[in-house]
Length: 419
Image (tube, rainbow, N blue to C red):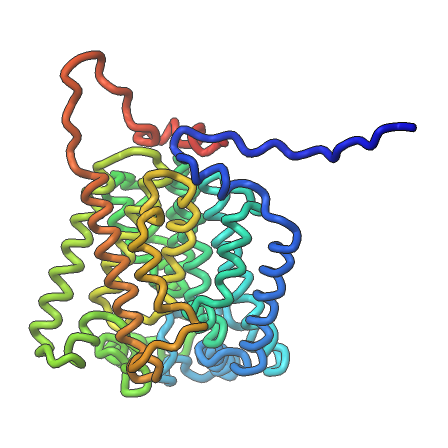
C-alpha cells in the first residue's frame, strides 16, 4: 500500500534586506478565498455606483461637453466643465454611447483605472499581484470613502491615479523622457499632476521636463483649435475654478484655504497659512530627494509630498484626490523605510472607513473637515518622514566611505527594480 504523499508547500518568499520581518509576509501569496472576497467586494461596489450614480455626475459633465462639441456648440459654455480641451476629444467616444451604457461603463472604467494604478505600483516595488498586500488593499477599497466617492462621481481623477505610478515606475528605471510623456498626457486631460514639474527639476532632467510641459501644451492648443469659442476657458472657466467654484461644490472642498475660513479664520490669514504649509511641503520634498536611498522609494515619497503640498493649498481639493498618491505609498509597505509603516499613516486614514459614521462629520456639509484632516495629516506625516529621511547623515569615523545610495544614478535604477 503506497503511503500518501504530502502536498507540496510553496516556499515562502525570500527576505530582502530592506523588507524587515513584515515584508515576506506581505509579499506571500494570498489564499483563494481572500482573492474571491476582494473580487466580490469590488464588484458590489461597482454595481452600487452604477445603480446610484447613472454614469457619474462628473463624467456626465465631460460627456455633455463632448456632445456639445459634436453638435457645433461651445463646450466651455457649461460652467461645470473644468477640464482642458484635450478631454473633449477624449470623451467623444463616450458621447456616442447611450446613457444606459454609460451608467455601467463609467464606474467600471474608474475601478479599472484605479486597480491598474495599484497593479503598476505593486510592480514598481516588486510585489506580486497575488500577494496578501495586493489582495488586502484591493478588497479594502470597498470600505474606503475616497474610492466609493470616485466610483460614484466617475471623476477623471482616475486617469491620474493610473498615470502617476506609471510615470514613477518609468523614472525609477531611468526612462525619464517616457515618464514625462505619460505624466504630460495625463495633464493634457486634467492638470492634476502639475506638481511633478518640481520632481523633474529636482532630478535635473531638463530634457524630460521640456517634454512634460510640451505635451499638454501642444495637445491643448491643437484640441482648442477644433473647439467653438475656446477663449471661454480663460474668460469664464478659470475664474470660476480659481474662486473655488460655487455653493454647490464649496462644502466638499477640503483644502485649507476653504476649510479655515469655515472655522472662523480670516480668508487672507487662511491663504497665508496654507501657502506657508505648502512651501514647507515643497521644502520637505526637496529634503527627501536629497536624502537618496532606494530610487523607487525616493520617487514615491518625493512625488507624493509634492502632490499633497498642492492639495493643502489649491482650491478645490476633494477627498478622492488622495487616491493619486495612496497606491505608491501603500505598495512600498513591505520596505522597512516606507512611510506606510508608521501607525500615524493608518490613524489619519481611519476616519475614511465608510463603515463608520463619525459624530458631527457625517453630513455632506461637514464631511470636508474629515477630508481636510486626512489630506493635511498625510502631508504633515510625509513632510516629517521626508525631513528625517533627508537629514544629513554623520559620516563614519573609520573605514571606507559607504557606497553611493542605490538609485542616485539612473543607469543603476533598472537593475534595482528587478527583484
